Length: 240
Ligand code: ZN
Image 1: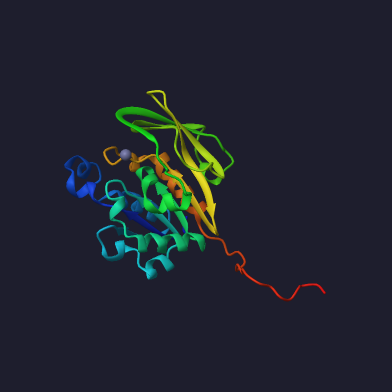
Image 2: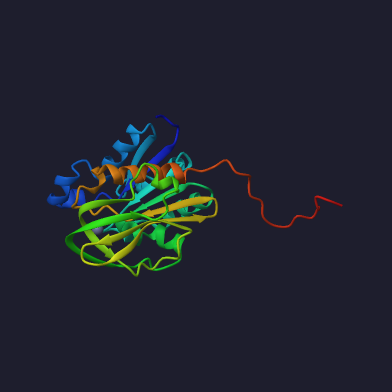
């Protein structure tokens, strides 16, 4: 299948360079694992990382991006506010945004949510089972009723987010926690999907179901050619 979707896969790309255990799992970086798969789906994919000028997210790059995916963890504070505002404006204007795993604490997600986006967590190699709770949703296309990640970082409720417009996945963890792990939002003309899986020490971004969800989410979040929005005073009524 080919389509003309233009995707930018953004990655903080620090763990892979500083931690041998992570480099062993993601030799080319988390961004390449995701980008490679989206390219194989026929999308036009570029990557961008934190340490590039303007974090790789110039006005030009964003103008040519239909959907942006975001992975960050240890350096959320290093993302310049000016770039966050730029991404925010693009989302409101219609660019899709896929927020992955620890990016729940990214500046851009917190700004879009207007909440702390805090949660409980534990690193204990626990099994995660993701239940599809909205089976007719485009992001669930091609999945079974649930899928499992053999070893994952545990996240637990409460996840301090606004109630999602649509909740597609609920995770259960071996240790007993549950978590809203696939959350859809709309802000302005832009669609946002938060997807929980993806800790840097596990090969989660090679797992077919996870890649399927990210692919489906990118397609779902793509902008639509809706009417131009006009605000403000409208002195002439349509009917007289
Ligand atoms: Zn993690």
